[in-house]
Every structure is written in structure tokens, then in C-alpha cells.
Length: 97
Image 1 (cartoon, helix red, strand yellow):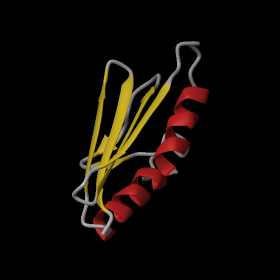
Image 2 (cartoon, helix red, strand yellow):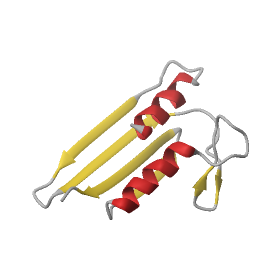
Image 3 (cartoon, one colour):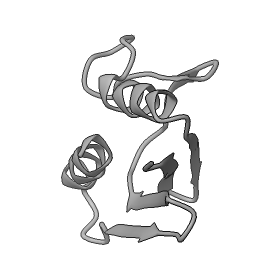
């Protein structure tokens, strides 16, 4: 839900009408759950090392992605965040057993 909330907020802040959110969720036979959320955004992504900085509260660590990272760690999963050409992509792989 944090990934979807972040995507919706990024699109709502856009001045352009070309906003989008794509979500793909799939389960494999190996008890893995893959979640990919891709969305448009405007502006700059702020990071400090591996930490994303909040776009809502200047200079503060983003809570949404931190929550996702905690869940990924709890379930021994993997996460990847990429952004290029005004498209942000969050990918999460979780073991569901």
C-alpha cells in the first residue's frame, strides 16, 4: 500500500496531464510474490546514500519506502528502486512461505 500511496501522491503533484501508474503483481510456483509499481513523476528524486528523502517534508527521510524496506527485510525479500526519464519503478520480491 505504501508503494501505491507514493505513486498516487507523485501523480497528484504533477502539473502535466500525462500521469500514470502501472501495477504488476505475480506469484510464482516457488512461493515468491513479485510486485512492481511504476509511476510518472515530475521534479527531482532526492536521496542521501541509499535513503530516499521525503518530497513532503524537506530534509526528512521518506517513511513510505522505509516501511517497504522493513517489510522486504522481514520476509527475506529483495527490493529495487529505479528512476529515469520521469518514471519511478519500485520492484519487490517476497517469499510468501
